[in-house]
Image 1 (cartoon, rainbow, N blue to C red):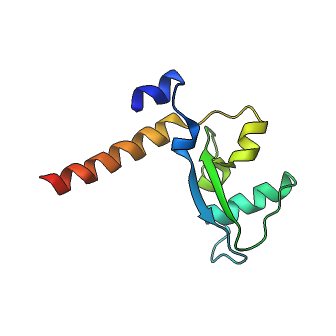
Image 2: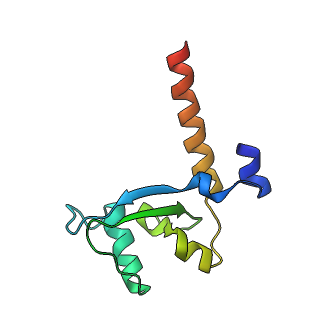
Length: 102
């Protein structure tokens, strides 16, 4: 799986993450709050309760919500997935599985 991240053969659907958007957030730096604000500036508004699938893309931005792209927007633009993010997530998941098996 990790090799397929870097050689471009990974099926992006395997990387989709999802969240349900709220209307009010405790913090403006909350990833979902940042995502909805950034999306609105791009003309993509979501009603509270909307479930979205998204990918994490390469970005110099510090806040995670800046790195989220809903899958439709991603398909329409030239963003690149954040391979390192997905690699680290996969390794963390595998370590969790291995610790249960030990």
